[in-house]
Length: 231
Length: 116
Image (cartoon, rainbow over all chains, first blue to last red):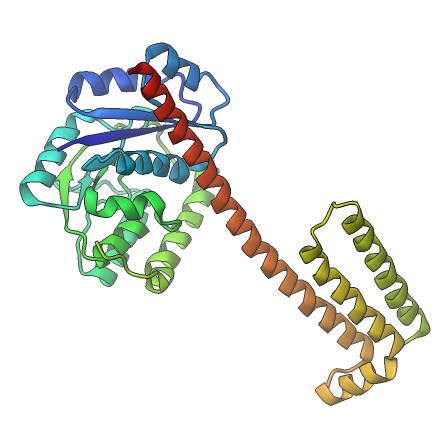
């Protein structure tokens, strides 16, 4: 099974080399591509100097647009699966292999990394949001997704076309709920992530509220007007 | 409606129309985009020239004064324009995203071919 790991990078010159080094040592068998999201720093130069496969966006599209570029490339190049790996080192590539094995063994379309499959989730405001989204997905799809906001997910060939071209497709829980409702077979695989930052600042508080409002709106309302995909 | 409001409506609409026509002539505005503004200024002129019709319509609709109805009509037209512009921005955003993505992928393929 050919997997392409997509590393969206926006001004990540500091952490990108160590992320790639770790990926190469822990999962040497997978291909990867860095998507430079119109960075203003030396991200693209580093990629060229180090010989990293690079998709160089001429303008900043944001995480959704950057990741989608990688998915589109993977889809057009005939990869069987595609996954997002954060450039800042939050995601541990050691979990790629077990996730991929799960996908193959169980014939899944979507493997979702989860930090809470084993053990309790910590008590924080962020986790309240996580639980709310989990509830929303359960209500609308009947499926239990224990960690809907975790970015470590493997998308299989059957859902790649939607992820690559649909303007509503984003690597976010609302799209996951949509794909489940379209009949995507999903499973969860335990992962652990390293936090880049601790605490909740005022700004991220406002952002979280916006994020939650958007997710609620999308999962409960806007998803139902989207045409279902035939996977 | 007072003479002052009528004069404002007529003057404002004529200036708008002239400005739009000048931009079209200099190819600064596409003709299809100018249609909205020309119709818009036509409606303003008509309201300035036919205050009795506006008053009658206001009474018919139960709007307190003719000037209020003028506001209502203008706001209504502007909301339509806002909505159309929002749609246009969405389309443009999708097109820019698509173009940037296609360009990045094409560039990558060229590099791969060179490497081979």
